[in-house]
Image (cartoon, rainbow, N blue to C red; front, top):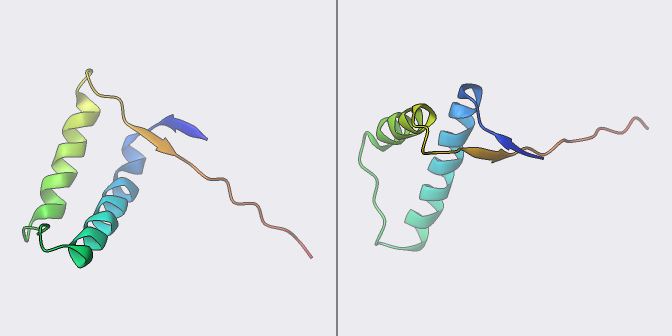
Amino acid sequence: MIREANKDDLGAIVDLWEEMMDFHIQKSDLYQMKPNAREIYTNYIKDAFKNPDYILLVYEIEIMSWDI
C-alpha cells in the first residue's frame, strides 16, 4: 500500500537511504559519505515534512503470517 509518510516513518526512511548509499559505495568509487551524512539526510527529510511543496510517500508491505 502506498501512503503519505508521517514523522513515525523518519527512522525507516533514513535507514533505507543509508542502505542504498552503502550499496552504491560498494559498487563505485564515485560515491562517498560524509561522517555526518545520516544527520544531514535526517534534517533534509524533516524539512521536507514541513514543506507544502513536497509530498513524501512510502510503500508499506503487509506481511501475513500463517498458522500451520
